[in-house]
Length: 157
Image (cartoon, rainbow, N blue to C red; front, side, top):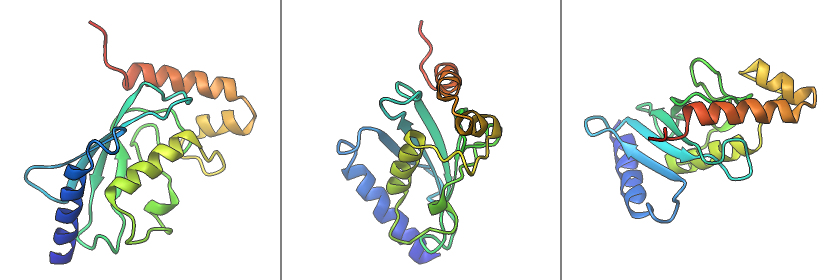
């Protein structure tokens, strides 16, 4: 547990230093628990998520970095690799392809990449996956854009 705390403190310092380097990711550690983090990520440009800000919750295990963090979307998102109700994310690096070389910041980058390049063949959201698998890109993008506007964009006035 001491090694994981040291690693997380190191990552915390890096996040503080790199704030201006990666404006699409805002990673914040819980004040009272180094194993709980949240992130705000910007939807990638030229996707239905563009203009949206999505909140992620990180639960870091005591065996980190030997085991991956649990990450889920707190913001509703219509995406084939994200469970619509729970926010669970289907991403290989969060499961069997995890490596201790990954950091919480690089996990955020991988999630942004997944948002731009969905994998409809391993869906957690079957409705979203079926739209893409059947070739209905317009239907998928329309639904994803609608949920982005409803859940991930600041309300006007």
